[in-house]
Image 1 (tube, rainbow over the protein chains, first blue to last red):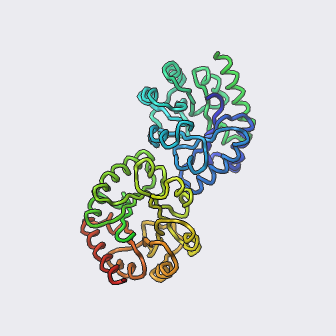
Image 2 (cartoon, each protein chain N blue to C red):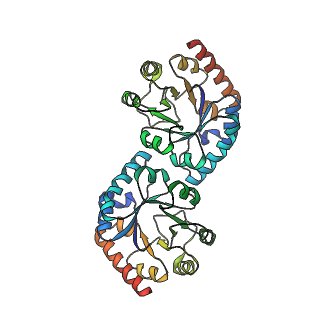
Image 3 (cartoon, each protein chain N blue to C red):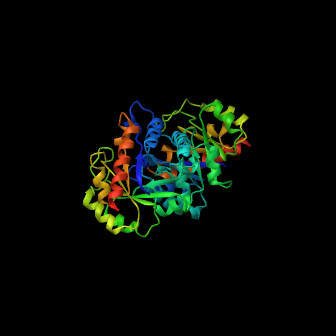
Length: 210
Length: 210
Protein backbone atom coordinates (compact mmCIF):
# COMPACT_ATOMS: atom_id res chain seq x y z
CA UNK A 1 0.00 0.00 0.00
CA UNK A 2 1.25 3.43 -0.91
CA UNK A 3 -0.16 6.89 -1.45
CA UNK A 4 -3.00 9.00 -0.21
CA UNK A 5 -5.72 7.49 1.97
CA UNK A 6 -8.90 9.44 2.67
CA UNK A 7 -10.80 8.83 5.91
CA UNK A 8 -14.25 10.37 5.76
CA UNK A 9 -15.94 12.59 8.30
CA UNK A 10 -19.41 13.75 7.28
CA UNK A 11 -19.72 16.64 9.74
CA UNK A 12 -16.41 18.07 8.49
CA UNK A 13 -17.72 18.06 4.92
CA UNK A 14 -20.09 20.87 5.86
CA UNK A 15 -22.24 21.91 2.90
CA UNK A 16 -20.50 19.48 0.54
CA UNK A 17 -22.00 16.01 0.19
CA UNK A 18 -19.84 13.14 1.37
CA UNK A 19 -20.15 11.51 -2.05
CA UNK A 20 -18.87 14.66 -3.74
CA UNK A 21 -15.90 14.93 -1.38
CA UNK A 22 -15.01 11.28 -2.00
CA UNK A 23 -15.30 11.68 -5.75
CA UNK A 24 -13.15 14.81 -5.75
CA UNK A 25 -10.55 13.18 -3.51
CA UNK A 26 -10.28 10.23 -5.86
CA UNK A 27 -10.05 12.47 -8.92
CA UNK A 28 -7.26 14.27 -7.10
CA UNK A 29 -5.42 10.99 -6.56
CA UNK A 30 -6.59 9.35 -3.32
CA UNK A 31 -5.73 5.64 -3.59
CA UNK A 32 -7.85 4.37 -0.68
CA UNK A 33 -11.07 5.52 0.95
CA UNK A 34 -12.14 4.61 4.44
CA UNK A 35 -15.75 5.28 5.33
CA UNK A 36 -15.95 6.18 9.00
CA UNK A 37 -19.35 6.76 10.57
CA UNK A 38 -20.58 7.09 14.11
CA UNK A 39 -24.14 7.55 15.29
CA UNK A 40 -25.95 6.58 12.14
CA UNK A 41 -28.26 3.62 11.76
CA UNK A 42 -26.97 0.42 10.21
CA UNK A 43 -29.40 0.83 7.32
CA UNK A 44 -28.17 4.32 6.43
CA UNK A 45 -24.55 3.21 6.83
CA UNK A 46 -25.11 0.28 4.45
CA UNK A 47 -26.87 2.46 1.88
CA UNK A 48 -24.08 5.02 2.01
CA UNK A 49 -21.39 2.34 1.72
CA UNK A 50 -23.10 0.85 -1.33
CA UNK A 51 -23.32 4.26 -3.02
CA UNK A 52 -19.67 4.99 -2.35
CA UNK A 53 -18.55 1.54 -3.45
CA UNK A 54 -20.39 2.07 -6.74
CA UNK A 55 -18.79 5.49 -7.13
CA UNK A 56 -15.28 4.10 -6.50
CA UNK A 57 -15.51 1.03 -8.71
CA UNK A 58 -14.66 2.78 -12.00
CA UNK A 59 -11.57 4.28 -10.33
CA UNK A 60 -10.48 0.90 -8.93
CA UNK A 61 -10.08 2.57 -5.53
CA UNK A 62 -10.76 0.14 -2.67
CA UNK A 63 -13.41 1.01 -0.10
CA UNK A 64 -12.51 0.26 3.50
CA UNK A 65 -15.14 0.46 6.25
CA UNK A 66 -14.32 1.55 9.76
CA UNK A 67 -14.98 -1.22 12.31
CA UNK A 68 -18.21 -2.66 10.89
CA UNK A 69 -17.73 -6.10 9.31
CA UNK A 70 -21.48 -6.33 8.75
CA UNK A 71 -21.40 -3.16 6.65
CA UNK A 72 -18.47 -4.56 4.65
CA UNK A 73 -20.42 -7.73 3.94
CA UNK A 74 -23.64 -5.91 3.11
CA UNK A 75 -22.03 -3.35 0.80
CA UNK A 76 -19.40 -5.28 -1.09
CA UNK A 77 -16.65 -3.08 0.33
CA UNK A 78 -13.07 -4.29 0.05
CA UNK A 79 -12.13 -4.41 3.68
CA UNK A 80 -12.26 -3.04 7.16
CA UNK A 81 -10.16 -0.90 9.42
CA UNK A 82 -10.24 -1.97 13.04
CA UNK A 83 -9.01 -0.15 16.09
CA UNK A 84 -7.99 -1.75 19.34
CA UNK A 85 -11.58 -1.41 20.65
CA UNK A 86 -13.18 -2.80 17.50
CA UNK A 87 -13.68 -6.32 16.23
CA UNK A 88 -10.60 -8.41 17.06
CA UNK A 89 -8.36 -8.79 14.00
CA UNK A 90 -8.51 -12.59 13.93
CA UNK A 91 -12.31 -12.56 13.89
CA UNK A 92 -12.37 -9.93 11.17
CA UNK A 93 -10.00 -12.02 9.03
CA UNK A 94 -11.97 -15.22 9.52
CA UNK A 95 -15.23 -13.47 8.59
CA UNK A 96 -13.91 -11.55 5.58
CA UNK A 97 -11.41 -14.02 4.14
CA UNK A 98 -7.87 -13.80 2.85
CA UNK A 99 -8.47 -11.29 0.09
CA UNK A 100 -9.96 -8.55 2.26
CA UNK A 101 -7.94 -5.49 3.18
CA UNK A 102 -7.77 -5.44 6.96
CA UNK A 103 -5.98 -2.58 8.66
CA UNK A 104 -5.30 -2.36 12.37
CA UNK A 105 -4.58 0.76 14.41
CA UNK A 106 -1.58 0.68 16.71
CA UNK A 107 -1.62 3.08 19.62
CA UNK A 108 1.07 1.58 21.86
CA UNK A 109 4.32 -0.29 21.35
CA UNK A 110 2.61 -3.45 22.61
CA UNK A 111 0.11 -3.05 19.77
CA UNK A 112 2.99 -2.79 17.30
CA UNK A 113 4.67 -5.95 18.62
CA UNK A 114 1.38 -7.82 18.67
CA UNK A 115 0.68 -6.82 15.07
CA UNK A 116 3.88 -8.56 13.91
CA UNK A 117 2.17 -11.90 14.54
CA UNK A 118 -0.89 -10.95 12.52
CA UNK A 119 -1.56 -11.04 8.80
CA UNK A 120 -2.82 -7.47 8.70
CA UNK A 121 -2.81 -5.63 5.37
CA UNK A 122 -1.35 -2.55 7.05
CA UNK A 123 -1.02 -0.93 10.43
CA UNK A 124 -2.48 2.46 11.11
CA UNK A 125 0.00 4.53 13.11
CA UNK A 126 -2.46 6.57 15.13
CA UNK A 127 -2.09 9.41 15.80
CA UNK A 128 1.16 10.72 14.40
CA UNK A 129 0.30 14.22 15.54
CA UNK A 130 -2.39 15.51 17.90
CA UNK A 131 -5.69 16.03 16.13
CA UNK A 132 -9.09 17.41 17.02
CA UNK A 133 -10.96 14.71 15.02
CA UNK A 134 -9.88 11.80 17.20
CA UNK A 135 -9.41 12.34 20.92
CA UNK A 136 -9.75 8.83 22.38
CA UNK A 137 -6.13 7.90 21.79
CA UNK A 138 -3.38 6.96 24.18
CA UNK A 139 -0.65 9.34 23.06
CA UNK A 140 1.02 10.74 19.99
CA UNK A 141 3.66 8.80 18.02
CA UNK A 142 5.43 11.76 16.52
CA UNK A 143 7.94 11.39 13.68
CA UNK A 144 10.40 9.58 15.94
CA UNK A 145 7.78 7.01 16.94
CA UNK A 146 6.84 6.49 13.32
CA UNK A 147 10.48 5.97 12.36
CA UNK A 148 10.92 3.46 15.16
CA UNK A 149 7.89 1.49 13.97
CA UNK A 150 9.19 1.60 10.38
CA UNK A 151 12.47 0.05 11.41
CA UNK A 152 10.71 -2.72 13.31
CA UNK A 153 7.46 -3.60 11.53
CA UNK A 154 7.03 -5.93 8.58
CA UNK A 155 3.75 -4.23 7.62
CA UNK A 156 2.98 -1.23 5.42
CA UNK A 157 2.44 1.86 7.57
CA UNK A 158 -0.53 4.16 7.18
CA UNK A 159 0.09 7.30 9.21
CA UNK A 160 -2.92 9.22 10.51
CA UNK A 161 -3.52 12.21 12.74
CA UNK A 162 -2.91 15.86 12.04
CA UNK A 163 -1.36 15.29 8.62
CA UNK A 164 -1.59 18.11 6.08
CA UNK A 165 0.38 19.76 3.27
CA UNK A 166 2.80 21.34 5.71
CA UNK A 167 4.02 18.12 7.30
CA UNK A 168 3.24 15.40 4.72
CA UNK A 169 6.78 15.31 3.33
CA UNK A 170 8.43 14.64 6.67
CA UNK A 171 5.85 11.98 7.61
CA UNK A 172 6.72 10.03 4.47
CA UNK A 173 10.42 10.66 5.10
CA UNK A 174 10.01 9.21 8.60
CA UNK A 175 8.61 6.00 7.15
CA UNK A 176 4.92 6.23 6.32
CA UNK A 177 3.91 4.38 3.16
CA UNK A 178 0.49 5.89 3.09
CA UNK A 179 -0.81 9.14 4.53
CA UNK A 180 -4.34 9.10 5.86
CA UNK A 181 -6.07 12.44 6.10
CA UNK A 182 -9.45 13.55 7.35
CA UNK A 183 -9.71 17.32 7.76
CA UNK A 184 -7.11 18.14 5.10
CA UNK A 185 -9.56 16.90 2.46
CA UNK A 186 -13.02 16.82 4.07
CA UNK A 187 -12.81 20.34 5.46
CA UNK A 188 -11.16 21.78 2.36
CA UNK A 189 -13.16 24.07 0.11
CA UNK A 190 -11.43 22.35 -2.82
CA UNK A 191 -11.07 18.65 -1.97
CA UNK A 192 -9.77 17.68 -5.41
CA UNK A 193 -7.01 20.28 -5.36
CA UNK A 194 -6.16 19.40 -1.76
CA UNK A 195 -5.89 15.71 -2.66
CA UNK A 196 -3.78 16.46 -5.74
CA UNK A 197 -1.36 18.57 -3.74
CA UNK A 198 -1.01 15.93 -1.02
CA UNK A 199 -0.53 13.17 -3.56
CA UNK A 200 2.21 15.13 -5.29
CA UNK A 201 4.01 15.70 -1.97
CA UNK A 202 3.70 12.00 -1.11
CA UNK A 203 4.91 10.84 -4.52
CA UNK A 204 7.95 13.09 -4.39
CA UNK A 205 8.78 12.12 -0.82
CA UNK A 206 8.48 8.41 -1.65
CA UNK A 207 10.90 8.87 -4.57
CA UNK A 208 13.35 10.70 -2.30
CA UNK A 209 13.22 7.81 0.17
CA UNK A 210 14.44 5.17 -2.26
CA UNK B 1 -41.92 -19.21 19.09
CA UNK B 2 -43.79 -18.94 22.35
CA UNK B 3 -43.18 -17.71 25.84
CA UNK B 4 -41.13 -15.09 27.60
CA UNK B 5 -38.47 -13.11 25.73
CA UNK B 6 -35.96 -10.98 27.63
CA UNK B 7 -34.49 -7.90 25.95
CA UNK B 8 -31.52 -6.60 27.90
CA UNK B 9 -30.81 -3.06 29.00
CA UNK B 10 -27.60 -2.65 30.99
CA UNK B 11 -28.35 0.75 32.53
CA UNK B 12 -31.69 -0.58 33.81
CA UNK B 13 -29.90 -3.44 35.59
CA UNK B 14 -28.44 -0.92 38.04
CA UNK B 15 -26.19 -2.62 40.59
CA UNK B 16 -26.91 -6.09 39.22
CA UNK B 17 -24.59 -7.43 36.50
CA UNK B 18 -26.16 -8.05 33.13
CA UNK B 19 -24.97 -11.66 33.24
CA UNK B 20 -26.70 -12.20 36.57
CA UNK B 21 -29.97 -10.70 35.32
CA UNK B 22 -29.86 -12.92 32.22
CA UNK B 23 -29.13 -16.02 34.28
CA UNK B 24 -31.91 -15.28 36.73
CA UNK B 25 -34.38 -14.56 33.91
CA UNK B 26 -33.58 -17.88 32.29
CA UNK B 27 -33.87 -19.76 35.58
CA UNK B 28 -37.26 -18.08 35.95
CA UNK B 29 -38.34 -19.36 32.54
CA UNK B 30 -37.30 -16.88 29.83
CA UNK B 31 -37.19 -18.78 26.54
CA UNK B 32 -35.27 -16.21 24.47
CA UNK B 33 -32.71 -13.57 25.26
CA UNK B 34 -31.98 -10.56 23.07
CA UNK B 35 -28.82 -8.65 23.81
CA UNK B 36 -29.38 -4.99 23.02
CA UNK B 37 -26.51 -2.56 23.36
CA UNK B 38 -25.93 1.00 22.28
CA UNK B 39 -22.80 3.08 22.71
CA UNK B 40 -20.35 0.31 23.51
CA UNK B 41 -17.39 -0.67 21.41
CA UNK B 42 -17.63 -3.61 19.06
CA UNK B 43 -14.97 -5.42 21.07
CA UNK B 44 -16.85 -5.11 24.36
CA UNK B 45 -20.12 -6.06 22.65
CA UNK B 46 -18.52 -9.21 21.19
CA UNK B 47 -16.96 -10.20 24.51
CA UNK B 48 -20.27 -9.72 26.30
CA UNK B 49 -22.18 -11.69 23.66
CA UNK B 50 -19.71 -14.57 23.94
CA UNK B 51 -20.05 -14.66 27.73
CA UNK B 52 -23.84 -14.65 27.54
CA UNK B 53 -23.92 -17.27 24.78
CA UNK B 54 -21.80 -19.53 26.98
CA UNK B 55 -24.08 -18.88 29.93
CA UNK B 56 -27.24 -19.72 27.91
CA UNK B 57 -25.95 -22.85 26.19
CA UNK B 58 -26.68 -25.28 29.05
CA UNK B 59 -30.25 -23.93 29.19
CA UNK B 60 -30.74 -24.30 25.42
CA UNK B 61 -32.00 -20.72 25.34
CA UNK B 62 -31.20 -18.98 22.04
CA UNK B 63 -29.24 -15.72 22.07
CA UNK B 64 -30.46 -13.05 19.69
CA UNK B 65 -28.39 -9.91 19.05
CA UNK B 66 -29.96 -6.57 18.36
CA UNK B 67 -29.05 -5.26 14.89
CA UNK B 68 -25.41 -6.32 14.72
CA UNK B 69 -24.82 -9.20 12.29
CA UNK B 70 -21.07 -8.89 12.90
CA UNK B 71 -21.59 -9.51 16.61
CA UNK B 72 -23.76 -12.54 15.82
CA UNK B 73 -21.03 -13.96 13.62
CA UNK B 74 -18.25 -13.22 16.08
CA UNK B 75 -20.05 -14.62 19.12
CA UNK B 76 -21.84 -17.71 17.84
CA UNK B 77 -25.21 -16.22 18.76
CA UNK B 78 -28.34 -17.80 17.28
CA UNK B 79 -29.73 -14.85 15.42
CA UNK B 80 -30.46 -11.19 15.13
CA UNK B 81 -33.33 -8.84 15.71
CA UNK B 82 -33.54 -6.03 13.18
CA UNK B 83 -35.62 -2.90 13.27
CA UNK B 84 -36.70 -0.89 10.26
CA UNK B 85 -33.53 1.25 10.53
CA UNK B 86 -31.21 -1.71 10.94
CA UNK B 87 -29.67 -4.12 8.46
CA UNK B 88 -32.26 -4.97 5.75
CA UNK B 89 -33.88 -8.36 6.44
CA UNK B 90 -32.81 -9.90 3.12
CA UNK B 91 -29.16 -9.01 3.74
CA UNK B 92 -29.32 -10.37 7.27
CA UNK B 93 -30.78 -13.65 6.00
CA UNK B 94 -28.21 -14.03 3.25
CA UNK B 95 -25.36 -13.38 5.70
CA UNK B 96 -26.62 -15.59 8.53
CA UNK B 97 -28.23 -18.45 6.60
CA UNK B 98 -31.49 -20.36 6.84
CA UNK B 99 -31.09 -21.65 10.37
CA UNK B 100 -30.63 -18.28 12.06
CA UNK B 101 -33.43 -16.72 14.07
CA UNK B 102 -34.17 -13.39 12.42
CA UNK B 103 -36.83 -11.17 13.92
CA UNK B 104 -38.08 -7.96 12.37
CA UNK B 105 -39.82 -5.08 14.13
CA UNK B 106 -43.03 -3.78 12.57
CA UNK B 107 -43.97 -0.22 13.42
CA UNK B 108 -46.55 0.52 10.69
CA UNK B 109 -49.16 -1.47 8.77
CA UNK B 110 -46.95 -1.20 5.68
CA UNK B 111 -44.22 -2.96 7.66
CA UNK B 112 -46.69 -5.74 8.54
CA UNK B 113 -47.75 -6.23 4.92
CA UNK B 114 -44.14 -6.15 3.73
CA UNK B 115 -43.18 -8.78 6.32
CA UNK B 116 -45.66 -11.26 4.80
CA UNK B 117 -43.31 -11.64 1.83
CA UNK B 118 -40.30 -12.32 4.03
CA UNK B 119 -39.10 -15.49 5.70
CA UNK B 120 -38.69 -13.84 9.09
CA UNK B 121 -38.64 -16.04 12.18
CA UNK B 122 -41.04 -13.68 13.94
CA UNK B 123 -42.23 -10.12 13.83
CA UNK B 124 -41.75 -7.81 16.77
CA UNK B 125 -44.92 -5.80 17.34
CA UNK B 126 -43.34 -2.61 18.61
CA UNK B 127 -44.46 -0.95 20.77
CA UNK B 128 -47.70 -2.47 22.06
CA UNK B 129 -47.86 0.17 24.79
CA UNK B 130 -45.94 3.40 25.30
CA UNK B 131 -42.62 2.84 27.04
CA UNK B 132 -39.82 4.97 28.40
CA UNK B 133 -37.09 2.55 27.18
CA UNK B 134 -37.77 3.10 23.48
CA UNK B 135 -38.90 6.48 22.25
CA UNK B 136 -37.97 6.48 18.54
CA UNK B 137 -41.15 4.69 17.42
CA UNK B 138 -43.91 5.82 15.10
CA UNK B 139 -46.92 5.12 17.32
CA UNK B 140 -48.40 2.55 19.64
CA UNK B 141 -50.17 -0.59 18.36
CA UNK B 142 -52.38 -1.18 21.40
CA UNK B 143 -54.27 -4.42 21.94
CA UNK B 144 -56.54 -3.73 18.96
CA UNK B 145 -53.58 -3.26 16.64
CA UNK B 146 -51.99 -6.44 17.93
CA UNK B 147 -55.23 -8.38 17.33
CA UNK B 148 -55.46 -7.00 13.81
CA UNK B 149 -51.88 -8.11 13.06
CA UNK B 150 -52.62 -11.56 14.54
CA UNK B 151 -55.59 -12.05 12.20
CA UNK B 152 -53.49 -11.05 9.19
CA UNK B 153 -49.91 -12.21 9.68
CA UNK B 154 -48.50 -15.65 9.00
CA UNK B 155 -45.60 -15.04 11.43
CA UNK B 156 -45.24 -15.61 15.17
CA UNK B 157 -45.80 -12.35 17.03
CA UNK B 158 -43.43 -11.08 19.69
CA UNK B 159 -45.08 -8.17 21.48
CA UNK B 160 -42.85 -5.55 23.07
CA UNK B 161 -43.30 -2.22 24.81
CA UNK B 162 -44.67 -1.52 28.27
CA UNK B 163 -45.49 -5.15 29.04
CA UNK B 164 -45.56 -6.21 32.69
CA UNK B 165 -47.43 -8.50 35.08
CA UNK B 166 -50.50 -6.29 35.03
CA UNK B 167 -51.14 -6.45 31.30
CA UNK B 168 -49.37 -9.64 30.16
CA UNK B 169 -52.54 -11.75 30.17
CA UNK B 170 -54.46 -9.45 27.83
CA UNK B 171 -51.49 -9.07 25.46
CA UNK B 172 -51.39 -12.83 24.97
CA UNK B 173 -55.19 -12.90 24.69
CA UNK B 174 -54.97 -10.28 21.92
CA UNK B 175 -52.64 -12.52 19.93
CA UNK B 176 -49.03 -12.28 21.08
CA UNK B 177 -47.16 -15.60 20.97
CA UNK B 178 -44.21 -14.23 22.88
CA UNK B 179 -43.95 -11.36 25.31
CA UNK B 180 -40.75 -9.36 25.23
CA UNK B 181 -39.92 -7.40 28.34
CA UNK B 182 -37.12 -5.06 29.29
CA UNK B 183 -37.83 -3.12 32.48
CA UNK B 184 -40.12 -5.77 33.98
CA UNK B 185 -37.08 -8.01 34.42
CA UNK B 186 -33.97 -5.80 34.16
CA UNK B 187 -35.24 -3.21 36.63
CA UNK B 188 -36.71 -5.78 39.02
CA UNK B 189 -34.98 -6.37 42.34
CA UNK B 190 -35.80 -10.07 41.83
CA UNK B 191 -35.39 -10.88 38.14
CA UNK B 192 -35.90 -14.62 38.59
CA UNK B 193 -39.17 -14.19 40.47
CA UNK B 194 -40.32 -11.55 37.97
CA UNK B 195 -39.59 -13.89 35.07
CA UNK B 196 -41.31 -16.82 36.76
CA UNK B 197 -44.45 -14.77 37.39
CA UNK B 198 -44.55 -13.49 33.80
CA UNK B 199 -43.98 -16.97 32.40
CA UNK B 200 -46.82 -18.35 34.49
CA UNK B 201 -49.18 -15.63 33.26
CA UNK B 202 -48.14 -16.25 29.65
CA UNK B 203 -48.52 -20.04 29.94
CA UNK B 204 -52.00 -19.73 31.43
CA UNK B 205 -53.09 -17.16 28.85
CA UNK B 206 -51.80 -19.30 25.99
CA UNK B 207 -53.80 -22.28 27.32
CA UNK B 208 -56.93 -20.12 27.57
CA UNK B 209 -56.49 -19.03 23.94
CA UNK B 210 -56.67 -22.51 22.51
